[in-house]
Image 1: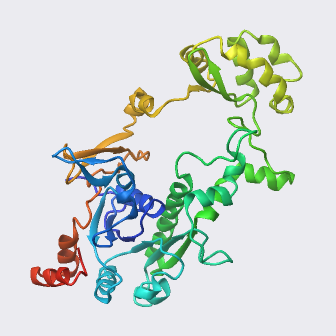
Image 2: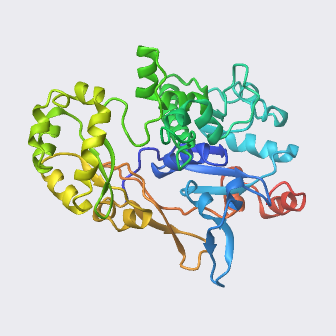
Image 3: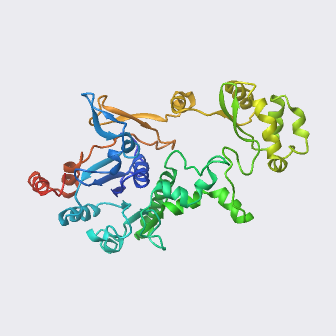
Length: 408
């Protein structure tokens, strides 16, 4: 018999869609939680349509299951319920009786019309952990605004420090605010579950994309708070460490990330520039930051004289951080990435191969490793099974609900 996972026995009702909420519930599902994903019949999670690319079926045609949807929805069961119908909202409340957590990302007050807001549920379910994810939070002057990752990156300052100094503000190439918000949500849910376990008291977790983005500005924001000076865009350079940037090597781009003066001295030896380590302009990181322009003039031709592999091998052997700028094909061909299991194949109901390739979970727990048991479900894949299992609905009752459009 396999060992129980950390969250075995925890049941989550997932009313979220897009990325922040689903990435949170996928993480909890990887750790053993039973995640029941509630989706609107016939439509489902918005990201199901966010493609191409789509999963290819046995007939060679795309299945309508987008790669974007796949990225955040494994280890869940999909139940298609129309919560806009009173009977559908009632099914959700009945399912909640056996759940510990509800995760939702409707607009502020959006679930109240269905009787599913926290204030409407907390007396009936006093130990319920209710996690609400919105663009701007449940309070404040912007609480009613719609929010997306892109807006949060701009509003929260990330784009002001991202991009070339003489270019336009730039967003990060992935929806990093959504991902970070999902991680904060998972952390908050685990903390609230621990509290509920001790006291029997549930609570609402109020998470905002904007708050998450401001918190994610961590060192840059603190630089501003301490100095009173807004940090500029530095491209690939670091505001507090030099040299710490991308350089053009002989055959591509390489990252040099010198973190202390000892590493700088070792780098100078490898680069054939031992005199720089004793130059008062460069001998300490404080001095190097002050004389950033002079270092930027000295190092590019030196870095361009060798290949990426030469720099990486020689500097890494001496403990000086240095690495390539990989494309995604490079990433998944990398022996370290492969050794760490960062690509996994999981079951899929309609994929031609019977499985789909997904990103692995970076958590490595020695006693209770994460699971990859369920692939991302197709819309409504588990409706009948879950409603029969959790609510003891008969085949006739399910058929009646389906005929009325309450379930899909």
